[in-house]
Length: 316
Ligand SMILES: CC(C)(COP(=O)(O)OP(=O)(O)OC[C@H]1O[C@@H](n2cnc3c(N)ncnc32)[C@H](O)[C@@H]1OP(=O)(O)O)[C@@H](O)C(=O)NCCC(=O)NCCS
Image (cartoon, rainbow, N blue to C red; front, side, top):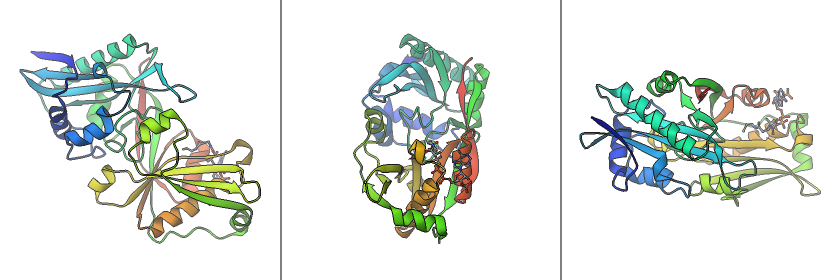
């Protein structure tokens, strides 16, 4: 008899065990431990035990699903109107599909009880409440195509693809920024500032990136010190450590609206990539919505290649 209940304080080692045995795909941190879960999940200020639902079969924890919310528009609080089930993990079990379905159903009931009007499946740059560094790489990419078992669980419950998220990578070995007239002109007229452990700009950014090594590159006008844009990277730990690479994950890049299409993002990222490459970083990863044409073309121009796609699901 399978029992579905919410998280208890003595669950972490059992959940780490489920994570190790479940088929989460190659982009899930392995081997999982309770201390990693503590750092990336339970210690978050918005962790709610009712949102982490656990399946138990004769005293053995056999699966879990984790429901969560994203930020309000101003990123100063949680927005309960949109909820997501970030992950569904079940160990190999004769009733594996039944357990996954029951976990999802319970997760949805929790999200609705907290006010959710929209139900998503998977995390994203917006919904990165938990598991950054434990699943997906530089950010949460929905549910990756390489996590077929998890994708199937959402599809069985009627979820449909809402957004395709591209995982893009580029080797930094020997990377040199391009030298042309535009780049030289930008270099002459702007200042580049490198900030390690920058002050987090919003409550949500602080809540989701505290404890990770963040570096921000800012591009400013040479004369007025006006901010033109910025790009933020982190070291993608612990996943990158498990992969055995020195990696940098680009979590955001943005250029001020009226300054776009002047080569600034290309210059900023190329300079940052050169700088990080000089420090021994060999791999850069970033994610972009497949419909974000500007971002996809920018990364293509910088030599990134799509290595995989993830899907952010939505329940109609
Ligand atoms: C994506 C973004 C950072 C690009 O900044 P930018 O300074 O305008 O980009 P650049 O001028 O350096 O353009 C470099 C290349 O990117 C591509 N590109 C940039 N904007 C584009 C657009 N609106 N449409 C199509 N291609 C675009 C082009 O290939 C361009 O090269 P080209 O000018 O030789 O054609 C900017 O549009 C932005 O801030 N968007 C909002 C935030 C965002 O979506 N970030 C990415 C995901 S984190």
